[in-house]
Length: 115
Length: 113
Image (tube, rainbow over the protein chains, first blue to last red):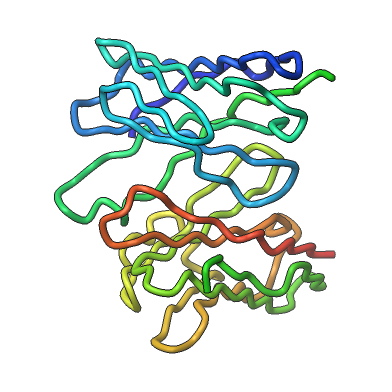
């Protein structure tokens, strides 16, 4: 899996949009970008994933650059409960059995939401 | 169930003792993964299963670690002769056959003293 680079920490004011960058300059054509977060010491929580188009769900938006070498996770209105470590992961899609590929976690970005 | 259930939440073992951790994946999920988180941010993949078959065991320390997923039973991760360095939180995750999302349990914190 391609390596990802994320800033180790970021702060964001409550109510503002939190923009978390991720660099994956060696990503391959068959690799998706995934975002997970770990709140305190809980199990990682899936946020969103995408291949090349921008994606949005109830939790966040994912913006992937046209060359796919970087992406940004956007939490539109951050709350205190969004304080967590956010992991950007690239994951290979091979054939039809996509669900069996492991996730390779990096060190993530520790996001702190400031009241 | 609708969540991955891991037991026990906490486990303390003396060095050299055996430790056994359990994971009940979400019903209908074909894939189960085990991860070890030693330091706060570092996850290490251990092993994955496709139903009861080992799919990928490239992360498993071969000598003391073993894992199983048998039909109609929780999956298990067993550590023989635990060492201090095995102290970690062990997370289990499951996913659908062709899903993109892996759902994680709340982990088992193993402390070896």
